Image 1 (cartoon, one colour):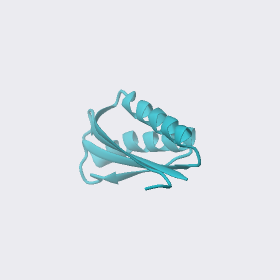
Image 2 (image 1 turned 90 degrees about the vertical axis):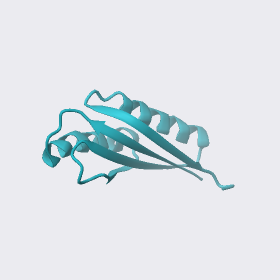
Image 3 (image 1 turned 60 degrees about the vertical axis):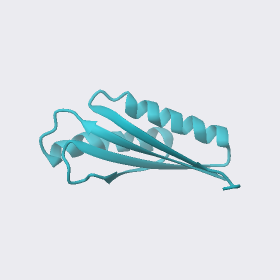
Length: 97
């Protein structure tokens, strides 16, 4: 069994309120969950309207599949024009860890 996690630190564009922030962050989280069957949520900076941190986790029996899913998730978030990806943190745990 392999477990992989990603955390994205995002700078949001022209967002002036927490309500506008939710309208940007929720669709990203929903798309990650729908397209890649990952567990995803906004995990930090909930009270800041121009910053967001999204975390996700994946469990797989195959290390290559896990890496592929994490790569696709990272590309999806990086490709969103309404956010600037400031940093990505990736963690990978295998059965030997």
